[in-house]
Image (tube, rainbow, N blue to C red):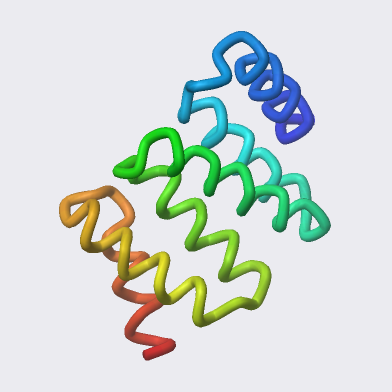
Length: 104
C-alpha cells in the first residue's frame, strides 16, 4: 500500500531530520492519499513544512489541496492565492488558477 509506506517513510525521515520541510510535504501528500479521515492531519503536515520553509511550493499547493478536500473553500482560496504569489512559475499554477476561477 503506497500511502501507508510513504507515511512510514516520512515519519522516519522526520525523526532523523526534524527540520526537513520535504519530509513534512511527503507526509502531507501520503496522508491525503490515505483517505478523507487523514486530510486534517495532512493540512497540519503542510503547515509545519511551511513553518520550516515558507516558500516551499509543494507545501503551499498541498495545503491548498488539503483545505479543498476538507471543504474549507475560503481557506483553500487563500492558500491557492498564496501559492500563485509565492510560486508564479510553479508546476501547479494552472490548477490553482482553475480553482480560483471556479470559486471566486
